Length: 356
Image (cartoon, rainbow, N blue to C red; front, top):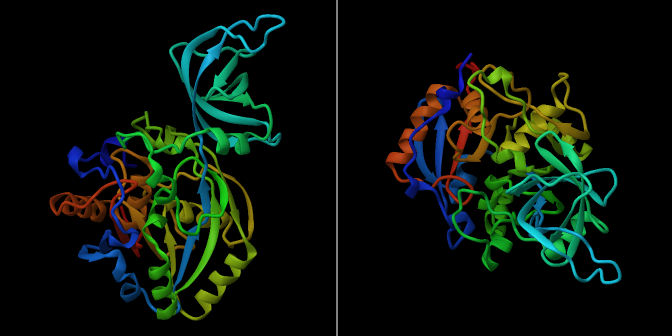
């Protein structure tokens, strides 16, 4: 079985896109079909897909999941407005819990906050630390946590974007079909679509359907073990509507292909088909796709370029073949493609042999 080092590659820092292009559909597109590589553009998608194909998109919406603040010390009796402030903290929400006031979150601080302590976030919210659950903290907000984060928090750009989120990111770090709030990172393959491109695809006879997978903060966590069998994926919430299951069945019946827009759409579909038959439903998935995985649903994958040594690079290597992906990434770097969230994309045909 491959090890972590098998998924490393040298990436010049200047290849990491720090901002979106002026137009969503202006990105380049590297088409990979086995060993064959073609340099195209996202606008070419209607010509690269066939009438009867089905695009499956993730309709999650990125929330204002990043909140800055400080630890709260003692609250003086008789004057709760005056608090003693401790060290700075940064909170990144991971996901809400059954009680809408409670969340799991990453908390960065010079000293780990203890259960029962409180945080003052964005000078507006007093949040209680309930305890630890693995790498995350369980926090209680003074009301609906997601609603309060939307009102007071900040857009959580990925750590490799070396600037604060600006006004343009409020729209450009969301897909045009985002509906269901809950992600802390965008499903970035979907960022390339604008209404003009979607209309061109419809005119071509390409249909669309939606799933929901809320991307968690764990998507940026590095793999820390050489043996991939020892890695444990973070869990993410997903929902597969019956309408999408029906659309996939109709696509198969007419001889069309299922095209996953992004690794999140692929993980949703393949999670729902692990037992063999694709069924509507929802829950949490920790599906870890590595070379040798048997794909049951997806025929093509539209995806951005992924970080070295990441679980997403392992997924695309499983889908397209490790050697083919290595060659494609070398080509992309040599031909100055833009990498990661605001970067360019690939259209990968599934390796028919599922070979390493």
